[in-house]
Length: 101
Image 1 (tube, rainbow, N blue to C red):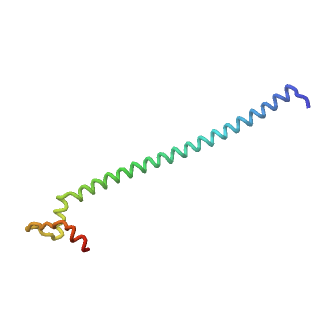
Image 2 (tube, one colour):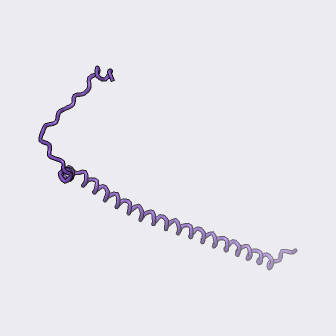
Image 3 (cartoon, rainbow, N blue to C red):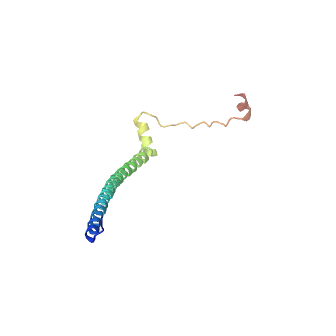
């Protein structure tokens, strides 16, 4: 088999075509993978924004429900009476009482 310029040209053309097709397929695969990652990232970003909104709402609700004014109003609604007597303080235990326990 002689190496004629015509033979060499055919081989180079076939090799070039194979390389071109493989590069094209690789480019399509990479583009598709990038598009899927971008879509997932966008979905996760939207989900994060939604969760941040829910957290802000829960923080607001928590601060509203734990305010002293709300607690007092709710206690009256539940039938608690306003305290009229003073509180008695409880003294700290002495060391001797701790040893007997």
